[in-house]
Length: 178
Image 1: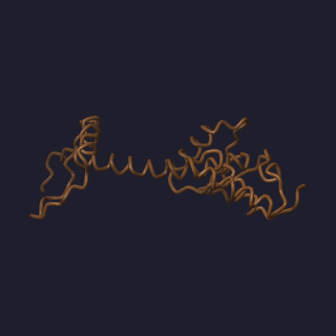
Image 2: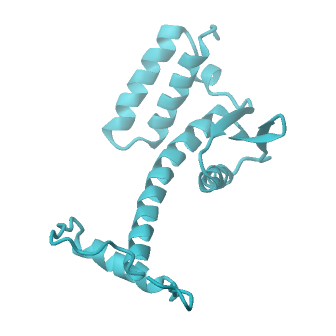
Image 3: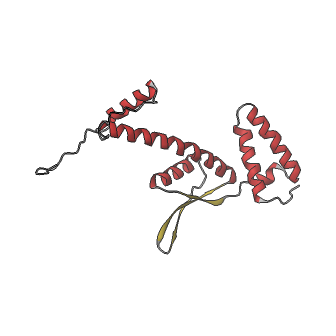
């Protein structure tokens, strides 16, 4: 029954199908209705849109840490034959990684990356705050105290993180005049 539909429609169907499988409560039911409507509108079967054809998807990244996160999430999906490609142009490495996967794995990976990038940012911000506090790198008081919007639990986590950091401190070299 396959009728040719644009790839954008097929991608939308795959995303909605993923939501029917992973949605919670009414979310999955609404997604199922929308999926049925789209399939009927375009005269397609679910198997037409959800195929196991493996292709290479490209993922841009900004930092080495972000590149590692992309690859780690990819491997956690458990592709049968994981292949990671790095792109270069005229001898320069591009900040882009290519991953072989099915369209369904691609949808899963995009969801994972959205979630884990946000979580990593929060943890990195908290680690930086703990580092600054641990090594007393904050600016001198200017008479204005800032209100802390942290909960007691968040403060406990910050203190625990500060304690886990190393004891290294910066010492001025001998003969340094301030």
